[in-house]
Length: 335
Image 1: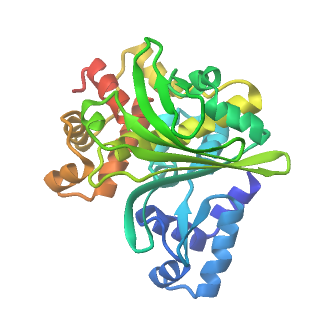
Image 2: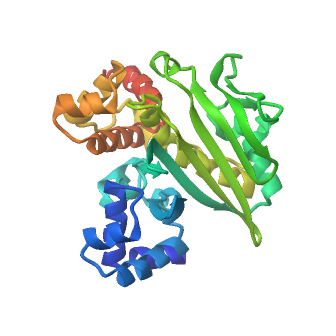
Image 3: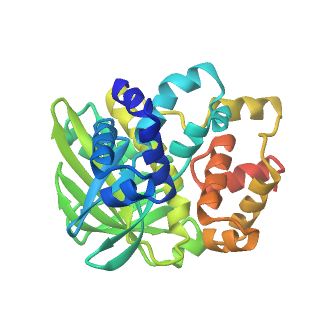
């Protein structure tokens, strides 16, 4: 945890994170110019943020792009904040709002061709690459942390991939694009649990595993979404708690309980979470099948603000996807 606290202790580094939150996937020059820093100063601060894995980088042609990685903030929250206060109340802390509750969405360009949204995460797991690979590809393990779904595939290029629900229905289907055991895995991602998403072309999920001492550095990228994607905002907010749960499972033998204690306590007491009128407006439009862009236009707010409302709602309701938020809000009589 020390590198994270050190990285966050500097106002300049917090500004860099804020800038990446607002516009992910920036170059060193972009960040320096935007924050009126020298390139050398920005480079030094970014090195500290990279050491804490709060920022991860990817090459796009000759450019080096910087992305915000919220997973370490989630781990910090799980370890410290949830001990002393109800987890959903942490939404009142601006740092948690900015870095944990929101999706890392980046628009990257490769060879001058826009790729669309890109969700990029990185996490260090105290386990071997073989164990992490099993956590991703073994249905008995995914069932314990991945919304009770069992992943199935032969993991040969061209083979089918399915995430199967307990009732036998398929939540997500895809095709293996690349499989190098214990190193790299890529497959398409076609959502079936949402009719609007099911009509959309598949996106791509890529896992990269790199041994680093007694740990494995796991990088997950979800990209190649079509324009005005319904799936991107639907799946994005759920990835970093799932990765944290995978880490917990492999390191301790137990996954995280992704339903917050605060939500459970409120439900037991018959109380309703505190949700603003604006958040309910956003949720109603999401339930109606509207995209983030449509919602932003109708409510005269930015798409990023829409994403923040959705993420804060999910935190307050103790769920990890917009679909679950709709069901929970309906059950509580909020919709």
